[in-house]
Image (tube, rainbow, N blue to C red; front, top):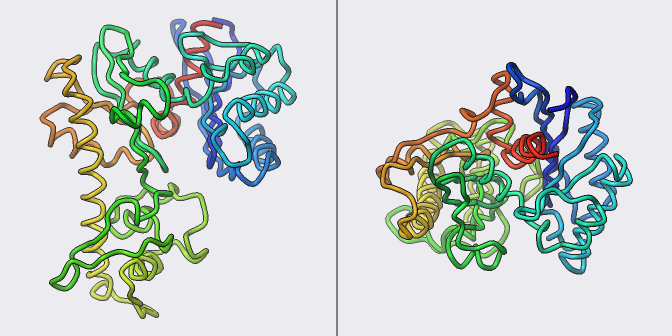
Length: 355
C-alpha cells in the first residue's frame, strides 16, 4: 500500500461525504478524518463544487480519490446515465482523470471514461461498497445503514455480499432498500394516523414536519445530524419541532415559551411515529433474514446517522449487535464519522486494497 493518503467520496443528492484514509500500523489502513457536508445537488452542480471546496479544505491534499454515488438520482439530471456522466466529469476535472476511480461493484474501480460508459455499475452502488467492506471483515451478518433519507439492509456471509437485488427497484421490492431515514423523511411517509387525546387522528399529507422533528422530540437525534433546513425554515428546537408536528395533526401547538409539560403530548406523538418507523425497518429486516442465508447467531451491523435505532431492533430480532465503528482503525472521532458515513470510508479502504 503506497505511503500516501486517499480520499473516499460518497456523492449523495443531499449530502457530500468524504473519508481520508492513510497507512496505519503494521501495514494496515487508518481512517484519519471524516466529513459530511450538506449538498443540495438538485439545485445545480454549483452546490457540489461548493461542497467539494469545503471538503478539500477540511481533509487536506490527497493523491488519489475513490468515488461512489447516489446523486445521479436527483431531478437535475434527465436520467441516471446523464447523472453518472456529469458527476464523473466534475470529479475528473477537479482532481485529474488519473487520480480518480469510481466504484463499480463487481466491475471494480473504474477510470472516468469507463465509469461514464457503465452507469449501471456505478449508479447508487454506495451500499454495495459498505457491504463488501463489512463482508471482508466479519464472518456473516446483516448490515443496516440507517441514513438521513434511506435504510439499506444487506446480508453477507463467507466474504460475499448476499443481496437479492442490485438495482434500486429490485432492492425496494425485496426489502433491502427502505426509503425511510431519520432526518429528511417526511412524517406523512411514516404513518397515516396517530393516537392523540383518545382518538386516532389522521395526519395531513403535507410536508409540515420531517422525522428530524420526531427524533428531536424523542431526544434520540444526534445534535449535528440534521444539516438541512426544517420544513418551515424555522428553528431546530424541541418547541419548534412540536409546532411542526402539531400541524401534521391539523392543530396549532400555540406555544411561545413551552414548558416540558406543554411538550408532553407532542413527545407522545413523536414516540409513536418513531415506533412506527422502527417497525417498518424491522419488518424489512425480517423479510431479508427469512431467506435463511445467514445463521440465527449472525449479528446486525449498524451504520448511518440513524443507527441509534438498531440495538433495540437487534434485540427484538434476537440477534447480537455490532457497530460499524468497531471495524475501523482510527481516532474515536474518525471511527464515529466512518460509522455515520460508511460508504465513504468503505470505498476508500477498498480502494487502498485494490488500486
